[in-house]
Length: 330
Length: 255
Image (cartoon, rainbow over all chains, first blue to last red; front, side):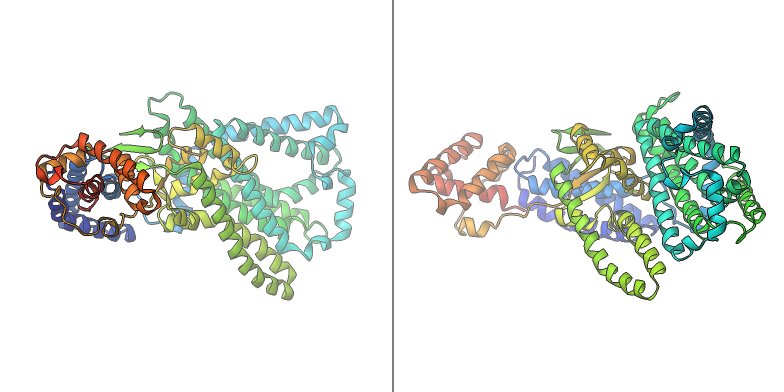
């Protein structure tokens, strides 16, 4: 029991003030490494504040003092007992090592995401083959409702004039819209991945229906020239969104593990953040390509150039994502 | 080790055996902070928007692109950047005394800040944060889905101001404070609600009629006398009001 509270507070306050100073310093300089002496002093101050809190806890009326000490001990606890490493962010290292390593480490979820999209694509193509009247339902975009041959003729005649006055605006719209939608797919992983699978399947359905429509109308080359330059980056980015969603869904469900749900989700947070960052990076590039390159068709840009560019980009993307061997997991 | 205390505090026990608790923010204050943040984004954008209009006058396409990208970066980047730079606080949270914290008491990580904000896209569905609001009402630690995934909680940071005791106590000699043993017992036996009731009664003295004053001070003094019966003359010859003033000084003065 503390008999003379005033004397106790007077004696301890300098130590609390010193702890506050050290905390402010650490909070403002998170990258600063402490010397052994500084660590010893900091830990001593933390233990002293903790001991004071234990002594003050039975004094029910001392609510303000208790809250002050709780805040002090809580902040010091965060600095002392935090074991997760926060290395300084280096953009080049993140692009060349962290993204491909994370992609490879979690490639199972990318494959599942790809399968959901491919099944959707097969469904979309099959549905259109069985009932061409369902085209308006399968393709909710007005510019896809006309016959592919008609669209190709129009595009060749316009020579990209319709878009040339608003390329920058169109590009910005594509970037922001696609990033929002793909991050939403990732966020839907919180539904145990189920709604993400539905969205991936639906995207696949539209893609499959469009491909079937153009190929059966004899416009396969136009389709490849139109979709490959940006689709070779945009579609993998959406699949990576699905990869993150399924990774999150698996962590929430937690098959074959004894870890708590909170522990499982906590362990995947850095990987989820990396995948979200990769999505942003890829979709910014895809937005530029789609607006400034994909929308120009023959005779402005020959199909061979567009298809060659798109194919090379697809190969390079997967060389980049698969080239780095992931480190052994701890 | 963490556990919930009385729904509004998250208690954390350190490996050294010290237990501290973090006061959790309510749904109302979080919604108010969100509204304030929307107002901040709108205000900043209204300034930037004027500059964009100037660019649009020169080149409509480039101005339009900057407008779309700028608003996207501002609206998505603002909560992430501020919560990271201010260690869990946006402008709205700073004003309302709230802070995002790690649910296990650790240091808030960049991945936690980013993911709780990405998950906001689901929490705002179908409108007005309905999903997030329901989630924070149903979960033990008042977490929206973004907080559940990121392992974060939103805590209150505002500390109550100590009362201005000099104005209430009048600087008279306190015959109770000399008895250290009974003063310690009084502090130990007095719950916060009773201590606050005593100080509130003294602060509102002038608003009470003489009869009500006698009644309120009498009941409170009797309550304190039963909890810590100070022995000797120092306590016997005091009026109820003076007894209460002395009790309040013992309870609050030491801070």
